[in-house]
Amino acid sequence: MSAVAELVGTFEPGSPEWHAARADGLGGSEIAAVLGLSPFESRFSLWHRKRGIAGPVEETEQMRAGRYFEDGIAQWFADEHPELQVRRTGTWRNRERPWQIANPDRSAKGPDGYEVVEIKNVYDATGWGEPGTDEVPVYYRAQVLWYLDVLGLSRARLAIAVGGCKFAEYVVNYSADEAAILRREAVEFLRTITDDERPSIDEHAETYQVIREMHPDIDNTRVEISPALAWQYRTASEVYDAAKAEKQAATSALADAMGTARRAFCDGVQLATRQARNGGIPFVVATKPKSAPTRIEAIA
Image 1 (cartoon, rainbow, N blue to C red):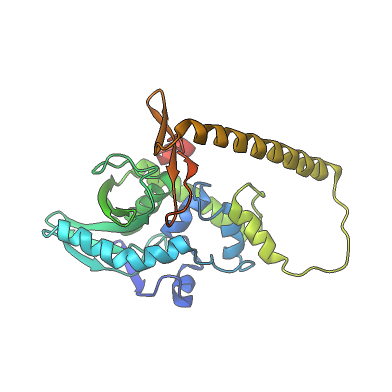
Image 2 (cartoon, rainbow, N blue to C red):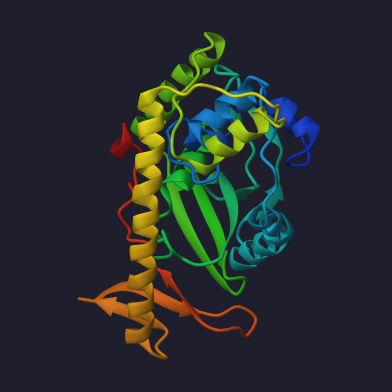
């Protein structure tokens, strides 16, 4: 599939062999964490996993669902493109930069050569733009750009199933400028691993999760905390409690204003939706504004 990369092997995603093949490098799903863009992994948690201090990411329900639905979505994509030869692929390593690893879900061969195909199962289309464009969540953009850079290819397609029933497709073309940013940040991150420079603690949920895993025991001792940290924690807790109460009041007011409506808008912009699970009582879910960066240059 690629002259600039070599096939390391074909491994089950998440298997010990799969993790071992990526241990000394960075894969596409990891580069977004390096840049602080991933909702699934933080720079802090990834650093500790690469150092062997924390274990692999535990499979979530969303990840499990994606694994089960992948074959069906891939077949859906293949049926939409009879002109392409869609095949499974394996784990690849760039020949010049062996720390660059790629694990595309599929490859597609057509009249213009090989392309990367990445499969996603998503609950809703939040963060995804008009089908057929390159308007995809920035962390997925980083992932497929990384794959293209590893493999020396020029185009990636993202095939998604929204809510398990709606198919959509997006196309991301290779960008040398964005790829250069990814490489630069990756090299710096790998240097911090070699030099034992631990990243700063951040607000990401995976950072807290890894810290919890690093200290699984409770002994009957006490620790003296600095006044600065004590102030930070107390202030944040008070602000959080106040904000949580205020949000609850605003949510109740919004639910009352919505009545039986499914969606709430303000000046043409969607604010929230009312949803229900398994026929239960409806609840309000905020619609996230599309304010996140859509290009790698935006965060460099």
